[in-house]
Every structure is written in C-alpha cells, then in structure tokens.
Length: 196
Image (cartoon, rainbow, N blue to C red):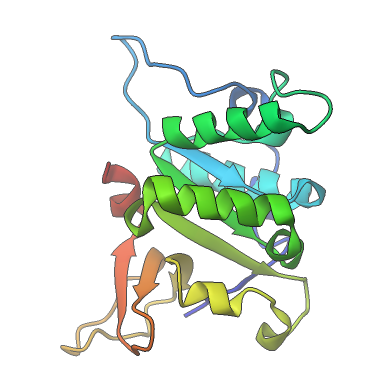
C-alpha cells in the first residue's frame, strides 16, 4: 500500500487546462450529467502537483474540480472577502480534498480550510491527498498525524488482503481510521466520489 505519494507522481496527468477549475461551482443544466464537485485545498506553491492531481481526478473519475487560486473572481489581495468566498465554495462542492504537501500542512490558510471543510463536509465527504517531497522518506512527511484524524487517499497494489483473506483489488481508495485503532476502513475512490 502506498499511503503517501511523492510530489511529481501524477506528472503524466498535468497537461490539463485549469480553465474549468477556475470558475465557481455553478448548477448543471438539465442536459448535462451531474458531476461530483470537489474543492481542492492547496498551497499555491504546489501548482505543478495540483495540476497533476487535478488531471488525474478529472480523467480517471470524471469529477469537476474547483481551485480557488485560479479563480479570477477572488479578491486580488487576501481579505475577509476571500475567506467568505472560500467558505461559500467549500459549501457548494460535494467533496473536500486537501492536497496535503509539507507546505500545505504548514500553511495557515490550508489549515483554516481543512477546519472549515471538516465542519461542512465531516469525515464522510473529505479526504487528504498526502504528498511528500520527491525522494523523501515517509518519516520526512509532516502530515502523518493528520492521517489518523482524517480519511486519506491511498493506492493498493493488489498484494494486500482483507481480514477475511480476500485480496484487495488494485486501485485508489479512501482510507479512514478511528483514533487509537489499528482498523482501517477502505472505500474505492470511485465509490467515494459517487456518495453525496
């Protein structure tokens, strides 16, 4: 199981236009298929990794992603209006994902968004997407304590087994662990996106 990805791991998906992700989440027309909407909290310095993750989520799971750093309707200078707009965007989206790089873990804005996301989406509709620096060891990742508090996205390679001995199908999962428990509940990422 890979539960902390390396920055750059989704580079192959980064050739994606950010235009669709720049606009606020609006209603879908009666002719459009309703897509799951996702607010991705991120450190603005992590734009390259963000593009890779955004491309991965859109191509593999068909979701609509919103990223505030590219939204032209946001104030040019961070202010209380910025916070109010972000609150509204988090509420409008079905899911909340924190691109949990070391920089994001240390960011006061990302932590504020995570706290607000927690209050709006609860554990059922939020997840961390943990990323350590390229070439770093897992112990160098600064967000490990968050992974026991919040669900997180992980990759299972098919060699893992459920308690009943059945193999876990290779793929991406949302993992959640109760505090002070060794039991990890896993949900296929595709299924998680479908739950609203």
